[in-house]
Amino acid sequence: MKHTTLHKLLMVTLLLLIISACKKPLDLDPTDTIEQDQALLTSKDVEVALIGAYADLGRSDFYGGRPFLMADFLANTNAIEWYGTFEELTQAINKSLLKTNVFVRNIWRDGYQAINDANNILTAIDKVDEAKKARITGEAKFIRGSAYFDLVRLFGKAYNDGNPSTNLGVPLVLTPTTVITDANYVSRATVAEVYQQAISDLTEAETNLPAKNGFFATKSSAAGMLARLYLQMGNYTAAANAANRVITSGNYSLAPTYSQAFPVVQEAGSPAQPGGNTTEDVFAIQVTNLTGFNSYNEFYGASDYGGRGDAVISASWIDNNYIDGDERKDFFYDDDDLFTFKFANQYGNVSIIRLAEMYLIRAECNVRLAPAAPIGGRTPLQDLAVVRSRAGLTTTTATLANILNERKLELAFEGFALHDAKRTQTNIGSLAWNANALVFPIPQREIDANKNLVQNPGYN
Image (cartoon, rainbow, N blue to C red; front, side, top):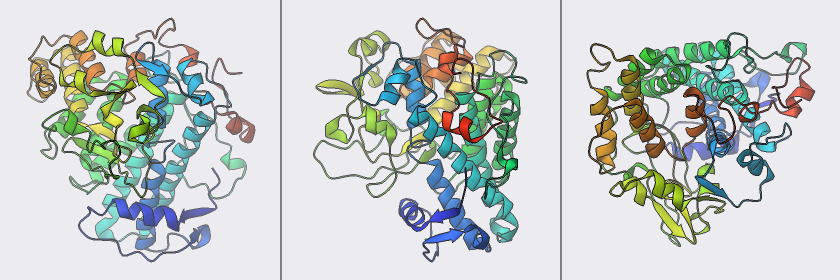
């Protein structure tokens, strides 16, 4: 995690192109690099660093999609037919990850790069203009808290698997890494400690962030990530309340149709069409035909739509899970094989948090808690009906099984399957939900570089 230079010109200028929806352009002078001893001396320097942190968060091996793709592959039993040649992804499909897996290594690297960026910003927050200080603090805390949450649930045991207070998570690094010394050989914190750090960061982010912030993180982005985190922990009251804050913010609404939740579907052979956030995107990574990368499209997209066509959707899985009349059943296309239209746009944004997930979280938590008055004032059936009616379906009974099934149908191929299986203790094929093979190995390169890191069980 050595950080010899803070940001490169290319990363900054390209990302500026994709945030043009912010009301006024940033006044930034280009530089080749910013050396550590000269960096972050002014408020403008910190603003540049924040843009770079978003760029690192959205790299292809992090929120550009690959951690979510690999989680889906680990959870797959009969939904995805894999025809790719990437050995690292084949390992995920076969539930046989190696500690030398390059994709796993890069997920760790890029996650900690985003964390280090956030640490740099927070260390220099006193240099920021007073009027911007709270917002920039919130954005940095959102980036760091989100990164720690996703790293710990990939590289550590599930929160409900044994004792999170003793199970090992990932190292907690809360100050910038500039040079490598003995102090950088950080041991793995426990799963509980990493979750608590993510909660602290995201809670502070929600407090400091504005309700609206262009394409950047907002108050609802932090609340939405907290809802997901608390659901993973089994803290259903906190999860429902966080989801409710997003729903009732008034800043988001479901796209009128399911297909409109994933714009712009690029027609085969047509010019590149930049995507954009939908009304239900609570947070999304920006991708255009000039910068950014949608790793979902890389593997879930057919070759005519900019992808490799490696991950084919099973026709029998579609038929066995979606009923006739469900618009989501028709959201697959035939290009010799079947692919999901969700990622047919090479330049579509990578949606990280959608409003539909928040309705399903609130519905599930209210069913589990069965409070005298439902959190948010809406019954689980009403929340379930919001999602189902958008898909063209009538209401059904709001049992826990039906809500979990709705999550599977609504959020299919968006990286939820593995984590939902773990929190609901649902086995994956012949593998137990808490099998060692369903936890990422600590990359061997990191073990070699850090004498204090301990490998996960099953990878020694």
